Length: 347
Image (cartoon, rainbow, N blue to C red; front, side):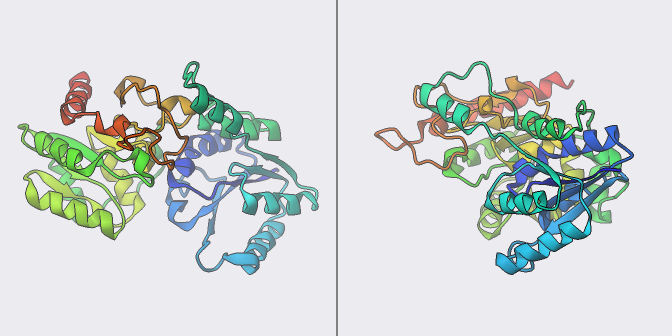
């Protein structure tokens, strides 16, 4: 029996894209055991994937912080008597860990992130053909370890019987109209549709008969913005208080469509087969981070000679005006019309 460690610590969206791979490989090799090492907040993504999938929760803020924390992780890995390691992150922490395990005779492979190809695409603006998707890069690591598997994953909620709290269950049971989720936030400015324009989108959608808008976010600053919007418009609801990732997954599954940036909730919605309309600014789907099995026609973006200018959206605007035209030139009407078009396909 093989004992395979799969490492991916961050970010949330990247960890979410690992789910289809872990499920598919574990299902293909039921005689082996797979251990997913990730941050504690992300562990619900893997808790119910299969009887031979276990999660190693990492707390980089406290328990596993620094050199002492690293040796705690290493000791845990030694104790598991691993046979294989798939490093799906390839950062300093995981590199040192896999090198230490190599000395114990563990077979290791690590991800090829395609940094050179991505940088070339940024420089040349030649976007076709698209680069290898991140999910394919994850799979390739396990293929090279000796665990090839076809992606058979469909829906994360197929593997759990967990129910929502009674108050949320009642809301879902009473669903009659169109439910639209909006996740308006992202880590980097180059991915975020301007808040004043997003408020226009929310207002326009909330005024359409039969439409209800549910806003998703995390953190105090995001919660304040969402609270302001929910107070300003009818049929707009604050979902920050869902409580945890499991509740969020169940609720997103009930949405008719999710409107998202190139950010985590695009990937979360993809895991529960909810259609996503995604807004792309400095980044581009051809770089390999598009939502799992999402329709590419649901992308909203502006063709500009300067984009994409960044793989992750962290770079400041390169235009002389510093105006983030890639996002500001997208109108509220464009977004609303795309959402309506996606909803019309479901009738």
